[in-house]
Amino acid sequence: MEKNDSETNLLTKSSLTTSLKKDDFLILAELGEGSYSTVYLASEKSTSNKFAIKVCLKRKIQREKKVHQIFRERDILRLLSTPEHSHPFIIRLYGTFQDSDCLYFVLSLAEKKDLLTRFKALGNCFDLEKTRFVMGELCLALLHIHALGVVHRDVKPENILLRKNGHILLSDFGCAKLLVNETVLTENNCTKEEEKQQLPEEGRKREKRRCSFVGTAQYVSPEMLNGEPSTSACDWWSFGVILFELLSGSRPFNGETEFLLFQQILKLKYQFPLNFVSETAKKLIERILVLDTIKRLDGLKIKEDTFFEGIDWDNLSKLKSPLFEVVNEE
Image (tube, rainbow, N blue to C red; front, side, top):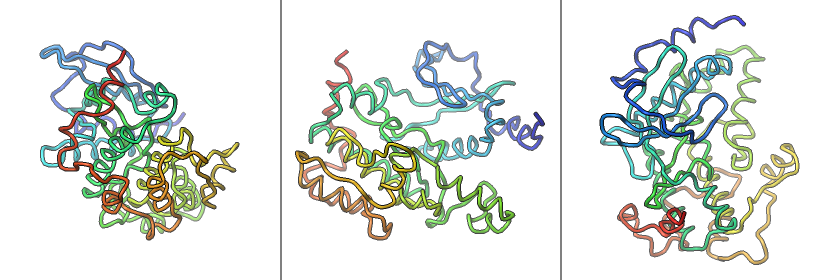
């Protein structure tokens, strides 16, 4: 296989490296695995502090053409980890380093796995109290990243991690984009439209297909399926899907094939269970799962909805989570 010299040079840039190094940590256990990375539980030798270390194989990154994506993820995590921009419900990047084979991201540790795992443990259904609390925290996390010009594009229960105190950490910014005034910027600091004009016709077709499938199928918004530029509205669509799922035990869109699933999303074909737990939640979901992004509710409107009435938004991170007992029962 012919090696891409420009990508190889990018991967050896010292800009990815901090003063941390592999020998500073003791690897304790594997936490999870992705297509080109593995996440480990690690202890810092000098302090015994626990972290999650994401280890990305350079050869796989190059083979899957994810070099720019890795750098974009790092830059977004750095932005969200500065003292002025960090947030209690968003994962934090403590440092990065590399060796000849791998890139390493030192991240906040979510001791109690992810929301999907806990959801399944509770029989695939949350009560209203747990749902309001978790979705309230997710709402604040999304509002925060959107205010900084970041759109996540892969919001789903697997990417909502849980701390031992029961509070969430929004994670995995591998699909995220940095927006400026809702205009998509590419890795070359061009707008999406400018980049398309630089591509030959076949390249533009590939770019549209690439945009169409960012994220996870069941949670992806209709505008992304149509290859339209990403905006914060796509995250609120995913928010609505998760809200439906937590209260019903199933996702609103469940086609037998990916094609049928996408058709359901594009035609907004879904139904609430007959015994759906909350009429207020139902009305909120109906105002979020809207094809027209202009009419779709955003985070500020969602916060004001009667479903979240009584939520102490200013002190949510200080309150005892209703998931505390759930995540600490084992």
